Image (cartoon, rainbow, N blue to C red; front, side, top):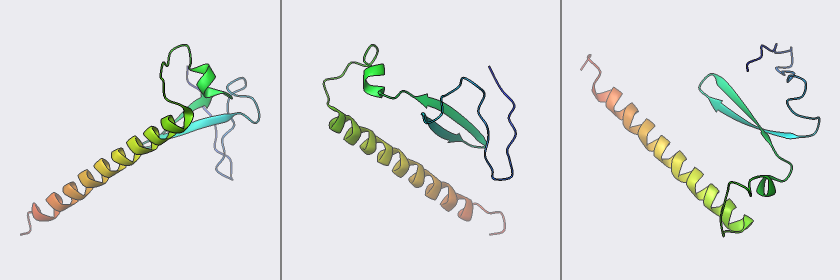
Length: 94
C-alpha cells in the first residue's frame, strides 16, 4: 500500500497512523531519489529468531555486518573510480 505525504517547511514528513508508534525506530534506506522505511522491532534479535538461525552472538553478528558493509562501500567506490576514469579517457574531444 502506498501513501502520499507532504514535506513540511523543516523537511519533515508525517508517517501514516499505525505505521509506527512514537519513540519507535525506523530504518531509512535511500535508493536513488526514493526512500524506503522499515520499522525496527524493539528487540530485533528476538523478533527474528523464528526465521533467522545462527550460532553467532550479537557482537559477532555486528562485526560481520560492519565488515560486509565496508566491503560493499569499497566495491562501490572502486566501481565509481573506474567509471570516472573510463569517462575521462573516452571523451570524444581527445
